[in-house]
Length: 526
Image (cartoon, rainbow, N blue to C red; front, side, top):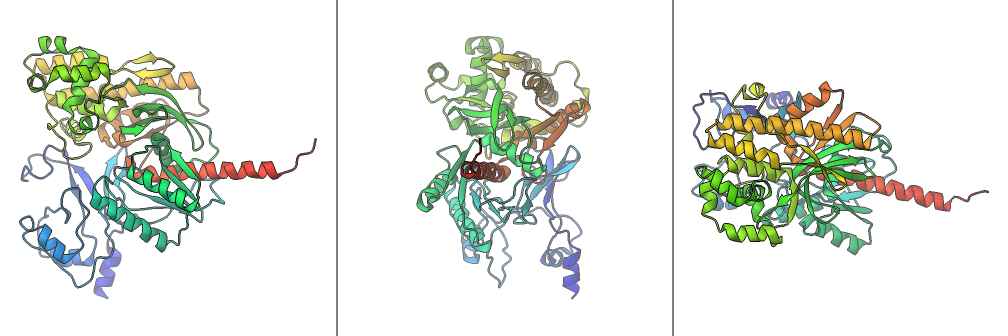
């Protein structure tokens, strides 16, 4: 009875919450190196309380898994795999049946926002907005990175816990186990399948296979349309709401033209997604290698803005110059000019990588997605943002064919000049964040003038908006100008919320198909 009462008093969700570091800290450098936030969590089971009741200080801990792998749930496997890593292992006489990561959250722009939705939240069902009723059972399989999947049944959405990156064979195996478990637990028999439009994603290929085997309709949904729909659904926007101006910023997604997108301005609702603007594209030198090695994106931006020869002559003493001169630059310049293994990409995530690498904040090779952008934001000292007035690095809005372009080229000359004269990295990063927020605001205003949507709502979606500094700067400007800002909170802004958006777009298509069939069957009278 005592433990039962104790359990009732525990916070139900108890996510890991990222809190700003205070200096000085007596923590080892190996704890969240280079980051400005630390993750804190409360004990959330009676076992935690029993273990920690005699401790008078916090403990530092991490998950029981190898890098990028799911948590180990078998005692024998744990002893073998964690030998030399863990000094002690706490075992139990009850088998771990279901793996679930801890949820992770941060407070940004006045709301608690989930970065990873798992234990404590999944699989609690999500209510659907007005107009989503009479739906078939839908299975949405998510993206490649930070994967979740989503089931629609009885006009509710059931979003899985965080699965991880499906390129890892261990995660892929766990994904299939959990998918089968959810379908069995919720007696889910899909009548329609929704997948990302990228043909190379493991989840997309699985959805294609299920669709063919069961003869089910297959909806291939553009990546950023799903991001937008996830926010619309979370914020209870009705199914027939007019198009809303949407800014989608992330690492990359497969575009409607077959190119790689990631810095886009849309008009979107559940039924449509019309692109009206983009970040001017640069090259991914080496293809996927540029997603792991941020200096490649710096080099691509130099090719695009200053030119390699001028860069080396004007900025010979920078650390990034020294690093680049050790690379086969003639080969990379040829790749850039010819487009050989250098696909064009309008990704805002890669721009963050480029700036972080230019400032020598990013490692040569990233350990995890988003690391460079996190280090760039973490470099900003407390109070520095408020000091930035003049000197912010602006990206002008330009004509880009039939689109509104956001041009990163003009930011490079002042940024590199500030590096050359030894300006503190804290101020350089602050100038970049402030300039980007101001530029995005101008881009949005231009989009409203051009598209003239029906409301002053604006959707902010994609993983880049997990950057607290950028989100708060931009949201403040927008709200001060009378915009209603819609952004993720209960779902991750990254690909962890993508399957929910896929499911909603698929549901909207299913209802449109149903309506069209009814109209065809209804006799007309002239």
